[in-house]
Length: 345
Ligand code: SAM
Ligand code: DTB
Ligand code: SF4
Image (tube, rainbow, N blue to C red; front, side):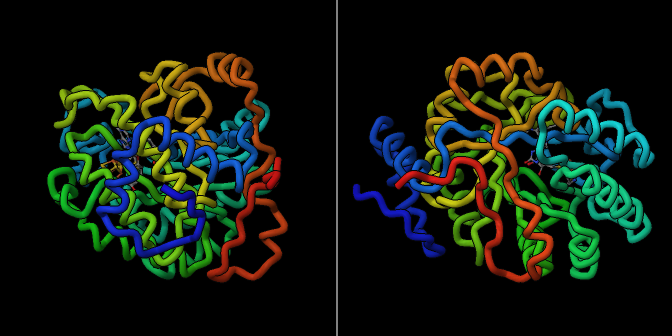
């Protein structure tokens, strides 16, 4: 199969399935070839996550420990005070993170909640960190307010294929998610959008998720690929585990389909072997969450990640989305470019 790096938005499901079915070595070679033309193959961006409002969420996402519908023994927390968020961001920066992501367990933020989140974005930006927020559905004017406050990224996932989606979430539709993504994109924010694998979906569903992502009007700037963290008390607590090679194949396909996106190896790393993570980096993943915790579940500790980077000769990427972007007009053109290790052609 020829290597083709064209930015396409017309991928057919069958083409993506054909990619996923390629012999593993051929798929890895194709993904690594695309990756090297765009990025430094030995740089990985690191982000830190903080749950700024935890649990008691009215949505019914079957994977999520924060849904009020499931008894997961979670400590519910109201929106954190600004000071506490700033302390966490300062620690994250000192540990080497370049992006600070704030997650809130809301269906959607109320305007008065957004006022407080905006103050957090401004304060974290002032520390010299990129900012990302994930807080549920946004109205058009809310996305615009976040953009005006200097937010860099908004994370809102499609989670799975349109066909499988109804098995996982009934309280908001796929179309609702696409609407929020449109508001975020049109406000000029960088879009962070991905999904979860290992929820009992078929390979065709995994292809369907990737198809929905790469056929958006613009490829997301950042594509988090989460491996389901099976949390006791959620409906997916006993989901069958996904073959690690299938997960790596999906990372490779994401890299090939969205050549310029940062592909983030997100939730589930605590249960992955070092060897599996190394294969994910080889397949084109170039971003991770760093720190002991994701939002409510475990992540490998900083020591473990530092040791892994050292064993693999991986450097932390300096800054994914340079600040000069803030001075350019917020429009629909792609602004984010990797800054470290531009490709050697
Ligand atoms: N409430 C907001 C929303 O749903 O958009 C933001 C927070 S929500 C926790 C962010 C994302 O985390 C979800 O879209 C989902 O993809 C991911 N996630 C949540 N629980 C997970 C789990 N148990 N395993 C893997 N990913 C998970
Ligand atoms: C995303 O796709 N993964 C992150 C981030 N976006 C916000 C969240 C993962 C959450 C995993 C479950 C938890 O820790 O609660
Ligand atoms: Fe709520 Fe987000 Fe969890 Fe769904 S994924 S239950 S919307 S916090």
